[in-house]
Image 1 (cartoon, rainbow, N blue to C red):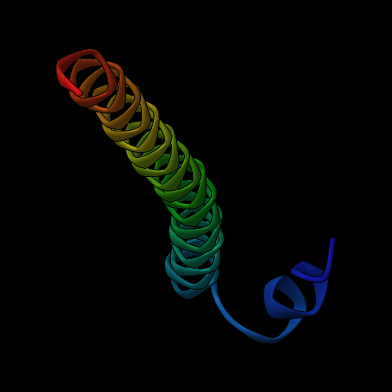
Image 2 (cartoon, rainbow, N blue to C red):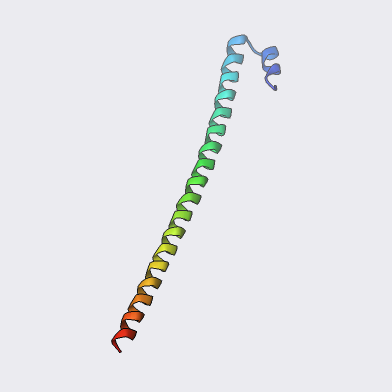
Length: 76
């Protein structure tokens, strides 16, 4: 990895602090990407469920219109 030059220039204590900080930042970036990916999946699921819900509403309205048309045709 790219941490070797820190060990040559600085003392061990300083090197450990830098190493831990770099590892911490890498972990934060990885978890942020993971959260973003999960968030995108949730948004996609939410959009899909909303679309499915609107399709259900549309089919219900269509069936209600058909039944009311049959009812009105029967009354004539």
